[in-house]
Image (cartoon, rainbow, N blue to C red):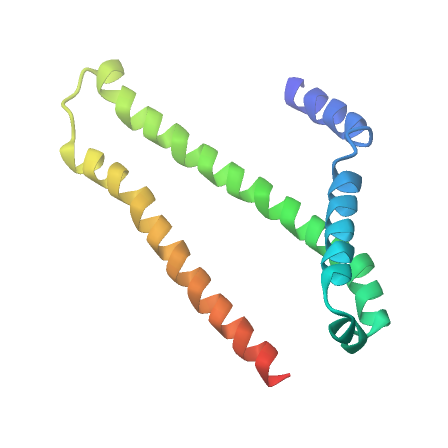
Length: 135
């Protein structure tokens, strides 16, 4: 009952937080400022329809997808943190021996994940640049 009540209250007050509106305003104004700081010749090469589409549709998509991904990452990091806390505290609770393999894996996992994310990001950005160059 309590989690459902908490979710209901959070959903109700979510409309008053103005998070998406503020983010939308910041992204749209940043895009407009970036456009205005270009030289006059560069501004003439950008289609006004593309700029309007980027300021409306693309900004909205970025906010929705970005917020969803931030919540997913926070959820996964919370699970990893709780499993680490359990692993570190389990030997006190159950009067067991330290497992050094577990401690090494717990220390190595975040490092390996960071390396994986970095390599994946580099490959993804290279593929996106290649795709944009082909257009």
